[in-house]
Image (cartoon, rainbow, N blue to C red):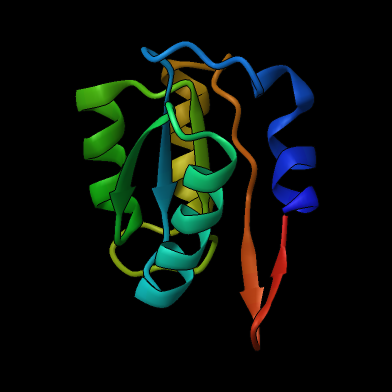
Length: 107
């Protein structure tokens, strides 16, 4: 949990209900585990999930979350292409990148 708090920053402890988070992860188990931790730490935070970069981009355009956590290796659109699009249209979005190697999470 400390890693997630460090990645999101201590200033997110008093999140407004209008702030939202998008998780883009193609591994269902990893996404569910991250959601479990995020919801425990920030129960009022609105969360959105997408299973690949293309769906993540579409979800971002619909909901414009303030925070995006993305995996790098995904089908349809990888995380780097997604980050380029996010940076092009909304450079102020917080974008921790996450990578799962054999069960280890790297933020």
